[in-house]
Length: 155
Image 1 (cartoon, rainbow, N blue to C red):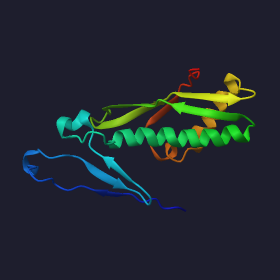
Image 2: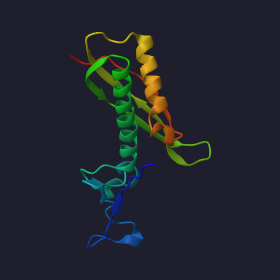
Image 3: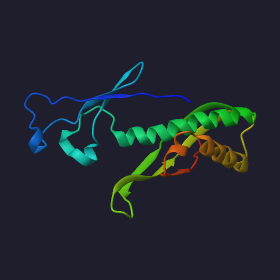
Image 4: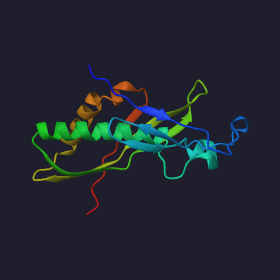
């Protein structure tokens, strides 16, 4: 078993009007070795979002993408493929659930992967992505639909 910790910290800035909703949503997310500027999504709070900060929905999409990549790299190595570059432009969709709640219901990964030597066939590639999805700790932790649409790397 492992534990993972994050500390979230926010303070009302001078001049903010909390009761009227006129306050910055900017805050920090601290991990053991680093601090990340964070905010609420500008899609949700408009001008009250902190510029240059990451929102929870972005972190969620990045977490799924990051976990899939790390697991894919491991699976590719075990299968004997040499990956030299991996880039993913992941996209998450926020929409209402059938219960009427807002949620990130779908995340589509768009990895572009460069190999040295033999490239996997489309069947091998699909199998590697399937294995990566099945083994990804984050994908196993959520009910969001995650799909992979691998793209050819741009030269």
